[in-house]
Length: 199
Image (tube, rainbow, N blue to C red; front, top):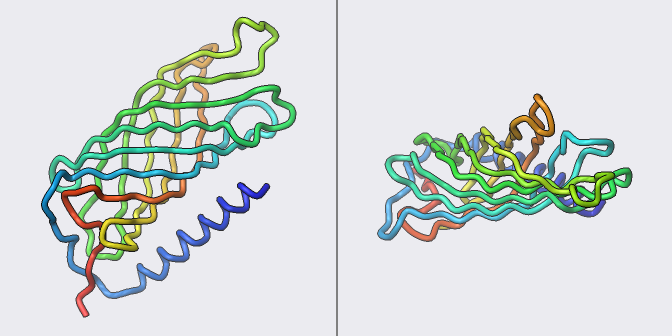
């Protein structure tokens, strides 16, 4: 319950900050700096499992991104949903390892929207009557989108919504977990995250 309260509070803070920033004057684009255009993100995720009763669980997320050209880049992402297993489920964990491409359009506002398409492998641990079959892996693809709100030169708050497709999960249909991740992004080099206002 504490984790769910934290996730809700973080989401409220994120969108409150977004509303404040949107209402401000337009700003100049982010400044370029020397170094590799690399970013690292970590976050806490709250997901609908699309599996059994209870359905919602939480977990952690990590991402590393590399900008190639003017907001277009590639990234790698690992997420594991393992906390607060619903009581009716004897076991459950959903972990994805995805590589993808992202786009952050240039904007003159004090936030940066982004879209992403990822694909890779999903590993699920599930309740089973067969003690020798409690884990399996599937092909996964996952579109997502969100915003980053710079708070320091190299640090931004990140909010993302993702919809996953686990292909033909134990049959002809896809498993479709989905949820929100709230976290932070740190720019190792290549550009400042902060956008500076014209005052």
